[in-house]
Image (tube, rainbow, N blue to C red; front, side, top):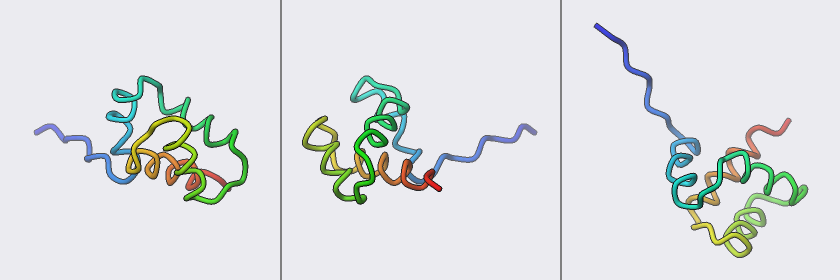
Length: 71
């Protein structure tokens, strides 16, 4: 009996639809967020929404993912 990969959960579960909808890899959005500097979560979400046209859920997932990776 083959084991199945566990279902992706959390912010990463949005990644396939983000890449499909906006035509950029996740690494691109990570770079945009990193280049914005040390802004707070909602400031980064609003930047992605206003300057890049992302929806709230997608922007929130990307920001949560990137901020979780920071030391």
